[in-house]
Image 1 (cartoon, one colour):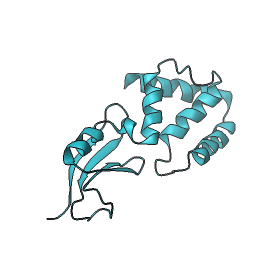
Image 2 (cartoon, rainbow, N blue to C red):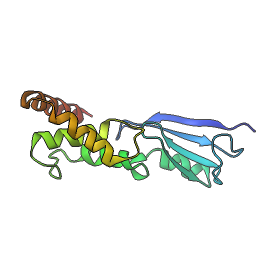
Image 3 (cartoon, rainbow, N blue to C red):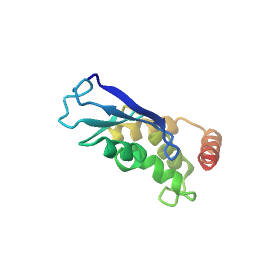
Image 4 (tube, rainbow, N blue to C red):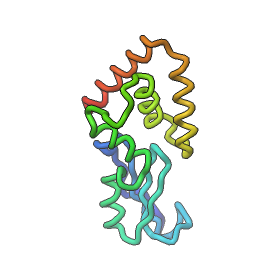
Length: 139
């Protein structure tokens, strides 16, 4: 049997693409489990013993992908109370969770976003924060 992708879909909650992979013949990974979930956007893998588990988890990447968890948390909180009220800090948080999907070092991603925001004018920051909040609220 040749391994294959069984399901590739965009998750409505996080906006990320997830896959269920049949890995019974180890074509994709040497992982000892037969079924794999992959979050394409963040290069996160989760393996399972059964296809049923893999299909159930594929529908909820916010449960097993750290960056999807952050996106989900940010989108579910319309007031974003957990973020600073400073527009620059809000923009840093938004950029950090939506950029560099293959960067596994979150501190590095946040620092890169912080440097980028530091170079912006107040008007640029306000415009981006407003546009980003409106885009997230539409989802």
